Length: 452
Ligand SMILES: Cc1cc2nc3c(=O)[nH]c(=O)nc-3n(C[C@H](O)[C@H](O)[C@H](O)COP(=O)(O)OP(=O)(O)OC[C@H]3O[C@@H](n4cnc5c(N)ncnc54)[C@H](O)[C@@H]3O)c2cc1C
Image (tube, rainbow, N blue to C red; front, side, top):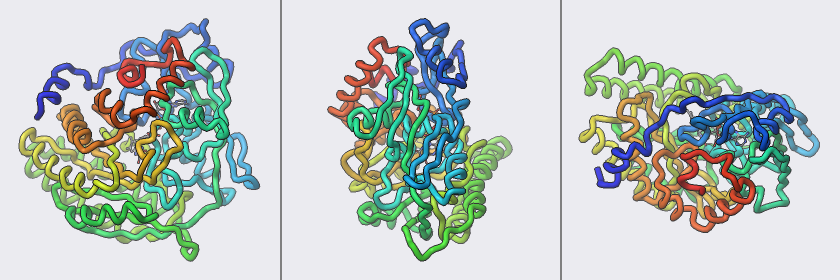
């Protein structure tokens, strides 16, 4: 462990602090929302918006301040099948939206799991998945216009022809105002074929660069202690008929509900870590071999989204984003990193590491894939003991390899690293933020590290 990691650990800077005396309000109308934020607000600042709360950092907390829960804003206002657009309120769950669109033969572009999350959280936070071709890396890429309430309770409408401002609003983590409505571009349901491959980490590492140059949608599950990678490869194909939603739901349920629950129970009933870890690896291997081989061979964004919620939202995770060109090296180094940690600290993540390829996407100022395609690598665990230390070590590993971040999913980012990675775009974002929130009413200590 390095000196930096050791001193960060002692400083407690990256510990999850329990928010104390936070007021949570759940406005259900525009006047209520505006009143929360107005200069005469009865509530204490800072104000932090929250959607489904599935972020892993402290971006949506407000110790001593006010969390504004947007989930009561849950109406789908208009599906325009003629112009391929949908107008929604910010608290609508992505799963509800996908189902309503499917009834009109429409879908969202890009693959977005974790259907519990909200439209507002998906625009303002990182919401990405194994997009195919030029789908765009983010949910927010599809936004045509948004309505926000700014830090002082005023209304601001931003449309896609205000390019700079719109690019700042996507991935703005609620710092430019609270989104209450959005119009999104949608498209007719587009089937894809899904094929599955199993390989060793070395084989994957050698193939990663070529894979990154294709327009195939790639998601993978990495078992570091079994030297196995399970690949889910998606291609658009007019010939295929999309598999019904049920097999995709079974796949999602196995991965995001059954596995976490089984592993949590194992940690209670099998105290010897060597035996427990062997069981975990065996169960993961069998599950991945089953669900990523035979279950689904085609899908569409209307069906292939699973139904995650419940156990999935209680998992610990931290996601880093790496340039696709170096990813082969990164993934091999990650295996060494996991083995070293297990040897030295007796900690390992019990869930498979999940990753996907992200297309180049410059639709957001704070896009980690602004200049080139990237691979996301998400370490996931049901275990809280040892997790906070792991997060710091993982951050140190990722920063060494030039990893980029989502400020709502990436734990332990050093402010100077963020400045290096985002460069002048971060400076530009800060400038826009200062104009819209000069009194820092929407800032909390976590975000202040990077954005003041
Ligand atoms: C098990 C699990 C798997 C995940 N898998 C993925 C994945 O594959 N890909 C991925 O990209 N992410 C993934 N995530 C991360 C997370 O789900 C996304 O980042 C999601 O978009 C957050 O949506 P939310 O509604 O939960 O937002 P929250 O977590 O509530 O908020 C996210 C950010 O947006 C802000 N915000 C929320 N609502 C508004 C609003 N109305 N106006 C302005 N700002 C707002 C918040 O202040 C915060 O900064 C996963 C999370 C979990 C728990």
